[in-house]
Image (cartoon, each protein chain N blue to C red):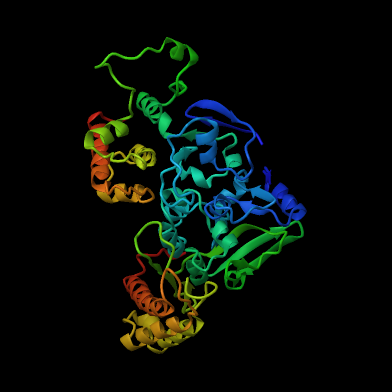
Length: 295
Length: 193
């Protein structure tokens, strides 16, 4: 095994071009487990720890360009206003030790359907900035997940950053697990209200081969809110609409029975989380969006 | 490959390190620091918690090569780390461990002489009876010490959060929480550190 230690982003891209099979290593919270248990023995490890650019973020007018290696600990502490959904999800990742190392870039690279950051990325609206010596391309999050632990990256590409839309309304994240810490999601749900475009976006984790959006539920709810004049009046979402939204969210799932939970339970839990996150975010919106800072 | 890094204030060099090796393996098997425990090897239990450039991390999930040029504090260096912190920044580091001269002068201590210096958190664990089998203790000590350094007056929720990545299988959490509260209370009495 060879340990490649590029000192700059350019060197990292060159190394990945030369060794497309090299496994990128940042926080190590996925890759090192596989190596420790002999599940993976790559010819090359590509250490990204020395590339400072990956640990920084820029907050623009409409989006945050989040460096791929920014650890969850910093996201939950410092990006709560701009990225409330992702900050909530970050807080549920592993433990303090894991959050000090793990990052959204790593979550995307691993592309596990259970990754905690995927639902809030889908709900907020995000693009993965993939780069290689050939150039840069932006991949919308919903196109990035191509299968169980598979993503849209080309062999010579690395994740430079994630461009996430800044919250223009309340966002929530909910996760089912057996305890509060060190839990892989049985299933997870994220919801973001977008008052500016009068839309609602969702993200579902651990309930299909890939993280997914519940598009039918989103469209239904947007229409129901529009029809009821809810955005202007701030009146509560009619219970029947909330119920239908929850049903449609469960309908977007394609879960399996596994050691963490049954498919039936996952569908049920997603419906419950959809209803609850809708209640929480809508309450926040009605009370003047105190839980989210408008840009 | 060769890895150079600082452990408990002392420059260390490990040779013939396999590229897929963890920092934990290097500490335990190559540097003779067995305080950080090897249990789950997947970041679930916290028994290998060390500080990497100040942050608590699972040493089993840090590749050895990622420690190059960085500073690691293990449970073996906790007392010295706490001593320097109490003395204020700029205290010259006193390498942890035993110098050759000290080792040569070593004699068995008569009963009643003071044992090795402990950090306040370590002393609190002893006093509160927070150690049963002891396997999880080093990781808990490193995590708890960092918590009190960062937050001198932690609430119970803060303590639970800070220790949420450390498992104890002797069901000793209550006394462990007592120990952290005790250490924080004593630090408060001692005034700002």
